[in-house]
Length: 359
Image (cartoon, rainbow, N blue to C red; front, side, top):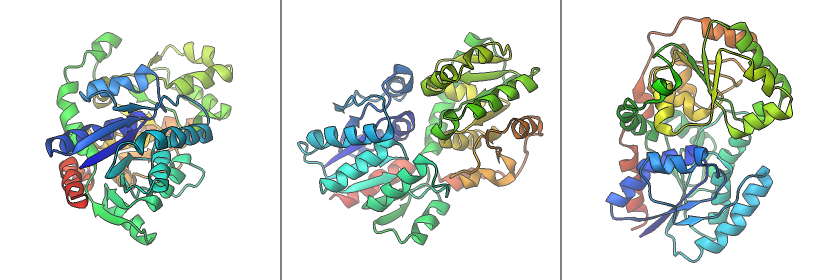
């Protein structure tokens, strides 16, 4: 019995961590295939270290490039490698280029495909991630849905694969990492006190391709000079600050601490101690909710609709006035339900389902 996981970016690796351990403890041989979609230490290797994962069995070394380049190269290189391995089931995670490329390759190689975190929808077709999700779901033989809303979305689409409600892996990931992250020294290193700062991330292509959005972000910093912002800056985001001629203006904002992307343990420590988080990441919206940290999402929509209830998550787009208003708004105190994301046993549920699927 042999399962292969295709991963290539932080969200894929984070989700795979508990699945690998659960499959391994069940006696299922689990191969890890790293596409190399992210190749910086800070965006890839550090997460293998944080989750105590073995080195990938296969590394495709695709590197950076346009979505078409990455997807095409992953499919080409993956086909050669994966057809040699007698795989019973290919697993893909989330909504990245590696997810879609792995799904297409499995389908064309006549291999069974499972999609972990299936059924999420923002209903925004301009988002590359949304199209990756939809295409992957419709290619999948087995769909592991993290929420009841995701199940409902897939039923509406009359999906052809077998559908399973599993809960979300983030519940157990956060429960595990939360305790470990309390030992993190990141706040001491940065000279920060708990609840003294706002955490910020921005990396999505639709945001980082707009000079106007970068200016809106800078206006936010310049309007809130009494507030401290901690900004682990994604390589693409830093590159675009330079491209737009705005990096110097960012560095002049004395209330913004820019730093390299940090490991997952340090990031969760920063998140759980923040006043609020400002982000365009889907995963961070959910992580913030599970940690009861109010979230300001600099997008116009979200696939994690459960987080909106009770204003735990507020959608602002990249609009300085709306972001500033959300920063100043009192934090929510009620309408919170961790159970919407499952019981914290998702990796075990998925492992048991896979054992039954590939007997």
